[in-house]
Image 1 (cartoon, rainbow, N blue to C red):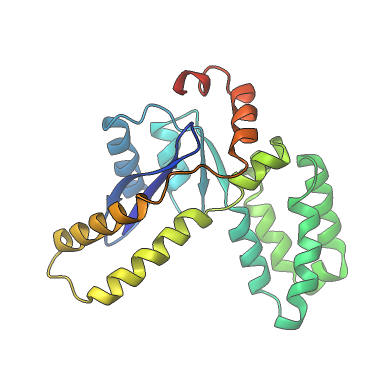
Image 2: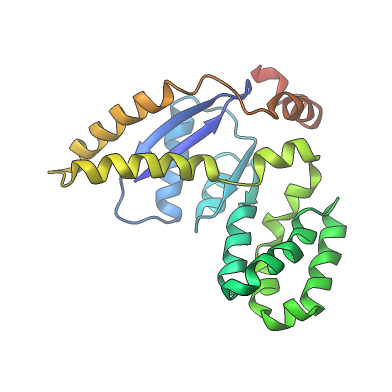
Length: 220
């Protein structure tokens, strides 16, 4: 199951679509993005991504989209390498990277971490951040109030958890259509509660209007 969750210019959330597919990849994501465009999505400002083949697909359909990997996913992946007793201290060290004031300071922090005792004890961590670096650095172009909104995919993960509980209760489905109907009805009930924007949205909205004066303001 794949869901597309969008944050509208007024800060409220909305479900853009539901897809049930056996496999995911560039072709599937291209189909999803093309369908969204045909259904009326005119512009996507940024995508917080952690999916193989997704950056290529979104760039093909919405070339002006800024692609950023999920910072929280990177943090979790980093901590997976560490023992439980090291995780708290290691998390504190990793903060110096993603809380840096700008991309250059973040790069220097990553270099410092790589050379530190933690970096030498867990060398795959710095290597993982470097592999994703081109999709990390867009994050540092924004002030703190915007970063709080764009650094994670927790909103979609929380939604998936709610749906998983409902699906497990229902059990077996005779076909994809039956599953889609249940998911649709569940989403209709969940989204009734989505009446408020994020607490930081007003400050973020001002920043987006400055950073994307033509694209963002026209949608308000």
